[in-house]
Every structure is written in structure tokens, then in C-alpha cells.
Image 1 (cartoon, rainbow, N blue to C red):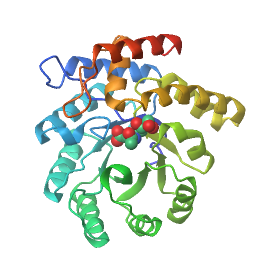
Image 2 (cartoon, helix red, strand yellow):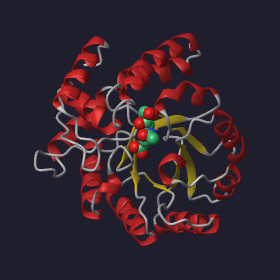
Image 3 (tube, rainbow, N blue to C red):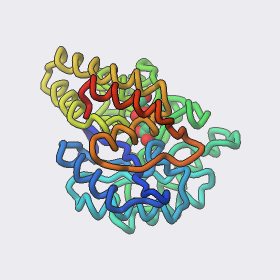
Image 4 (cartoon, rainbow, N blue to C red):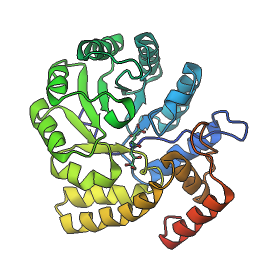
Length: 293
Ligand code: NAY
């Protein structure tokens, strides 16, 4: 469980021109990020468009990632879906192919009570013999579970952590304190990483680690080494890019940056934003100016 820490990219899913998962580009992206020193991978999450894919595609993507990583760093498989049965199937699959943990968003769309959400998570946790990392992302799921909710689930030894994707540093700190020192809490919003580390996150899972891996690996390292001033200026540098990213759909923006960085990961799936030529030109000029190529 201690191996879950540091900078963990929520991998983009590369597609080929026909829109199918590109094995070649996936392997390239994974190798590239490993060379930059990332500490793990999160596959099929929000950034990975997992919820826009069939179960077969989600399984295939995980296969490729686990095979390319070869145990170098942990792989966390996002298995979230609207129905518990799909999550269970994906969790069993993840265990079988050698993923190190599963993770899941809360069931969304239908308005479930806390009891149902808890039951859903416990069912997933019990389905496989690898740990579960919860995924708190209320802006996207509409499910705002309380600190107390997570504290109770943290009592299960199958549930080892939570990825906290919200920008409430007080709630995050309360969560870390309530769940105890052995529970792994990951920062979600990359633009708030330093604040998350300051209140005790063990690491971070995020989308922009696909396009700025070195910067964030260095931010994490400097923070750990106590060089907070340096960490702060790295966060400021990253946030100039993220402020621009937020003018677009983050997946469309990041896929364009990766393409400019030499790894063609294809286009996001509709209905995600498809960039116009003019937007591409803007992003290209911005990327050159801010030296993220
Ligand atoms: C995932 O599962 O893909 C994530 O980890 C998503 C985390 C991202 N949150 C959202 C709401 O998109 O990385 C962040 C985010 O893109 C970044 O901080 C820019 O806002």
C-alpha cells in the first residue's frame, strides 16, 4: 500500500484515426511518462474517457497499460460505472490481469442514498483481491459524500484510500485526519497540488501529469525535500498552463498538447469537445510560448 504515492497520471486514452484504442500510442505514452519519473498510473478514469468506452475497451486498455508497465510502478484501474455488476466484472478483470488496485467514482445519474453508495463501494471492494481507492469527484458525479462517509469506509481493510477531486482544502484536511495515517489520500485538482501536499496528501492523481510530468515530479520532490519556495514557483508555472487549459475541455486541450509533444493520442470521443483549427493554432502558440513542448 505504501507504493501508492507521488505523481500518478490519470492516463489519457490514445485512439487511432478510426477512433479505436491505439495500442502503439498507449505503449509510447506509458513509456514516455515512466522515463519522466512518474510514480504510478491511473487507467480509465475521467481523463481516460473510461465512461465513454465499452467494458471490452476498458479491459483492453488496462491490458496494454499493465503489460507495458511490467510492474515498474503501481497501476490503478478505474472501474466506475452506473451499475454495480459492471464495476464488479471490471474489478475482477483488473485483478486477473495484474492491476495493483481498483478505483471507482460514486454511482451517478440516479439519486442514490448514502446507504446505496456505501453498499456499491463495499460490493466492489469485496469483488477482487486487490485494494479499492475511492474516487470523490462531486462536481462530475453530483454525489457529495461527507468526511464521515469516507471515515466509515476507511475501516474496511480492502479500502485503502481516496482520490479527492474538489478544491476545499479544509474538507481535505478533515478527511485526512478522520481517516487516519494509513489511509492514502490523493489530491485531485492538479492546480491545488501544493495545498494538498501541505495538508498531508500522499500524492496526486491527475490529468495534467500527462503533459507536464517533469514539472510535477519535481514539484513533489521539492516539497518532500522541504524546498517549499521552489515547489510554490513550480505550482505557479503549472497553473499558468492550467488556467489556459480551463478555457477548453481539458481532454481536448491535453490531447492536442500531447500531439504537439510528438505522441499522437488522437481525438477525444464525442460529445467531448472537438477543437477547431483556430483553437488548435491558439493552443500551439500558447504551448510554444510557455515551453511545454
Ligand atoms: C481522472 O480520473 O482522470 C482524474 O484524476 C481527473 C482529475 C482532473 N479533474 C477534473 C475534474 O478534470 O486533473 C484534474 C483536472 O483535469 C486538472 O486539475 C485541471 O483542472
